[in-house]
Length: 286
Image 1 (spheres, rainbow, N blue to C red):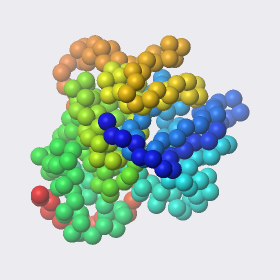
Image 2 (cartoon, helix red, strand yellow):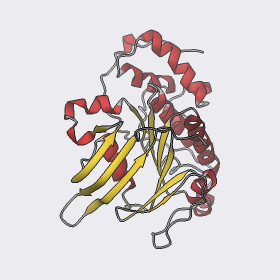
Image 3 (tube, helix red, strand yellow):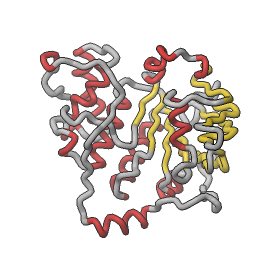
């Protein structure tokens, strides 16, 4: 478990509210702070406000009132033209992996470096390093459709980390995985946190959260109903709606067979500048 650093918070919410309409609230009066180097779980049922909170950080959603700050900067004052530069300070792991189906593993990861104008030399050096770090280098030449769900998730994490962001945000990173792959992904995120990366994970996997004993912020109907410190055992709010447990997942998978591979149909990655085929190198090697 990494030790959170002292000093100004990495992320802060001050009485933040989000209303999608006069009657539909995404968040209600949320105040919290996350220090550099912390590992934080956001827990709650579907519709509790977890995704809205994450989208506020990435500026996919704007607050109706209140203040969101990242590294001391009020994001409400951030011009739209600066949002892409803000997102370069964070690694984002979406629920659906968001991999480009017509590009190999190493190309998917390299693509994120090309989008921020990193040189070919940097790409050749960095891509093998990050693929080794997440234990997917042996699949560098595979296409997303040839990977298991756990392997696709590793590629998504590698892509999120490739530009060395100080903050990693993951939205339900184990939601489509079996228990074994879920444990592997969370172990990977824990190692990254030990290396100093601030981690924020939205999830409803109770066993994983309880086993890792990191800080847990629990949401219900858009409001914070619990904030459990790292090292303490967290139990979900009894009044919250059902959480999916490993046992429930295993029961579902038992009726579906042993094939856990997940295929992408229509990924929607964040738009970036296209790279011409003539400008791509061969697979980088360590």
